[in-house]
Length: 111
Length: 97
Length: 310
Image (cartoon, rainbow over all chains, first blue to last red; front, side, top):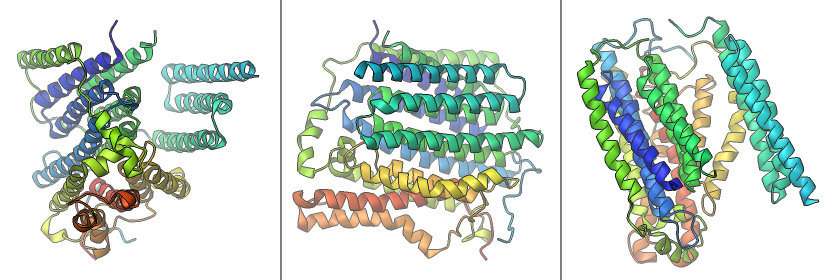
């Protein structure tokens, strides 16, 4: 019978593979960013498996990988924000991916 | 006494699960957005309420019980607001083409 | 039998991930990603990492989801340019990804025994610091330098986003976050929820010392309340040239740095705390960090300036 940590480890491997596939094959940048986040989530779950396996000394899971993942999630969010800002700016300046009918980002409605 | 409390918890949580199941079936089977929302919000609020009700006697102290009720109220508020927003969006013609 | 919920969860997770990658529409993909984020936080609970589950739900699913949804709305309806790859290339990539997955699965199925762990080392000194949450102890005491650098990364990311402002608009406010049509229920929610949300955010920060919770989770809840108010159009995003905004952004890292340097003469060196005052210092640093995190996350979602300064 498979253990629960091994099960989540397999899930992490699946997430990494799915994310990698999307990252390599999607032609559009936003989809690449999403796929990259999936890949990252899979990697984080590996840390979770390591933490769960490292339960000792009365702790339910090893706190060190947990702390690293918390840091990692926040840094991944920051990187995603920069990537999204970059691709929006690219679309605005190139004009190729921005819909002309979309609400104008440069609106200055008086408040 | 403990047996009675446990029996109450099991009955209430099971009833809650039934409402969740019914809501999910409604979400999948109903024909349009508004009826789906109806199934989802009605059944889920009631189902979640029953689960919280069933868990209340199991909470170790009053503070945990109050937290459970607060969680239920927050889910009610969020669910009601979100389905209102979806319904408004749907009644104005759905997502932009 | 006891593994049944885990099997179901893993199955749903993988299905949602496949949907995220395979969906034709960009918005569907983002919604799939949010679903993955929420399921992941359940998986973290099953892995006994409640702190991470809270972070994943707040940051991974919530804040990232909002950021991506906003990007969807600002890009065109369907991004069609860029040829879809040919079938042979897709098969080749699929095979390569399967090989990667198989290699990772092998590592998981034949792990090192006994499992390496730092838990006893982490538990050994917890009582000296007076904190009950081992994850907070690692984040703010043992590996405080990592947490400090991460705060610097957040500030740098915000500078990076702001740097994408067109020259003419520099110093102005980010584009409005409001919905296209104003909506009664949203305004109502934005008026009712923030007081409750702020209490919950502060509770998470305060609770983080001894139980699951902490700076990131609480700070993200605070940021979410601010974003909700901006989306309901009750407040506009602030202009990025405002000194008060910039001071709030660096406030947390500066307090952390000051506490770190103070360690040189009140304790054993950089970022070390005197044993008797460890807890008050850590709680103070956490409170300052949470405030800055809330402001930084909110401004990261709002994006670069899109309006000329008034």
